[in-house]
Length: 470
Image (cartoon, rainbow, N blue to C red; front, side):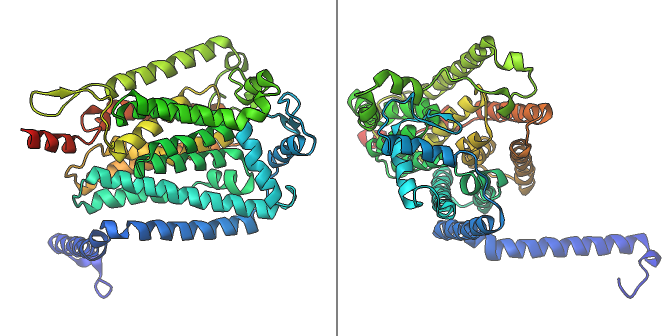
């Protein structure tokens, strides 16, 4: 074509050249798939994929710390609150304050950030603090990607599908691309990231290792750092009711959560119980309109009104009740026998457990009284999983075009959420776009045939046991 004037070639010849070129491209892509993508989709490369992403993230965090200036927001206030307890011996939560206001986090926050204070030369070595938070960020990413990998393999059920595997790996890759989340961890040092790290660690123990009681202990530690973790509590309660064979196992798990809170809060509860309970778990906390990310399209008087709070609370509870009614439906173990989804007394599938916990939290996010910028850490790492499970609820033979279309839609939704949290200050347009995207994702999760509608637990094992009994 470089030697011949293309305009002089007749139409039939042009079509032939186009078909030959298309065929060559298709053949080349097929060669790449068969040679690389298909073999690399094997489970033996899952760990290597996670390690490579963590190495890249470590390098990226290093570049951010070196090149981007640190932004002081809450770190100094955290240190002041810790010093009020450690140095001045204040146990009255109403008297523990920092530059940003009174302390509103449970006792675990004080203990953990006291350690951070000691590691960072009384809180003055910001560079060391950034390195600690960067390490926590990379460890959290490794935990989340391990959870994603177990969910993916749980859905595959030992089958092979390179498109399915690489679509999930693409979802994991997106978790490395958020400018706002990197900022929250290594440039602003919010405690939200620490709480979420502990939560994902609890999920790893509960779901991957099937150590539910120890996972409940870690979950309660996360709550003691910041109580937003309680948004996962409805899902956790449901799973505790299902995974144990009777009420005793569930009660032990709940007791571990409660006793952990009592032990951590004991020094404050024994001295000023009312002060601690009111401030550490301040459920009636008032929020400022200027910091809201998701409700800027409403007038300030509506945002501050009690009716809006009540409507959001009712919608939150109603959605949880609807989901619970779906998850608790009896399922068929044979063509004629139905079994309750409570007190199963066996391990639950990873995809069902993680989906239940993440969706429970996301419902709370959708109907949240307000979202601040740091609250993005509460659900950013869960968004790809919710979208991917809503898009690929079960392993089926899908065309490449289907995967491309769904992936483009999911990428677009994630992009809108990221842009909304990057818009500072929030505008009516950015807030409305964020809320509409939240509602659409929730609609996808509720309306799609998810693990909750049939294969939510290890039914294959139940069926095998029934066949043996027969």
